[in-house]
Image 1: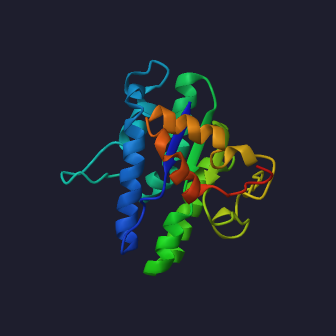
Image 2: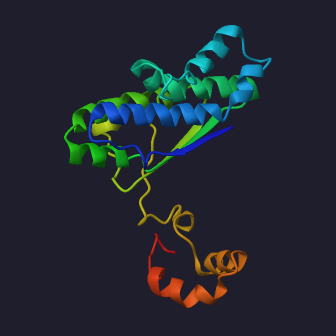
Length: 201
């Protein structure tokens, strides 16, 4: 089982707006697994834990408490592992966007604390987690929001270990253009995007 999402749209003028945005994201992610409500492998209490991630107010905002938000991914990985009898992979894209927006709007400390708790709950000592991948532009530092985490590895676009995983090579671009009947745009795409180097690729 895989939980995959992006934090690129988590923004707001205030920390309160951002928390609503995070709750909406998590609630939307949780809805993708509605089969858990029917799962014979989950007990009544576990189904209630799942259901708590889904409750909304009349205006459509999600009711989950701040503590429930911080533990939401951890709980979801537990439930999915129990349902599938397999550990869960978590993929988080643009993990750093909420921090950049918070810095611009003056609530960085609150956002850093929320993300630290959110990530620590799902990534640290989570027996239901197979592994997680976080991508973003800011380098992951062991200080800041990842203070309590260990056993993680940082790969940048200059590392050769996963250089083929970043970007697209020429062959892949040609295949995509062909798939979308846009092969005549090859020269234009090459002019705009060619020349990036990831590790040795």
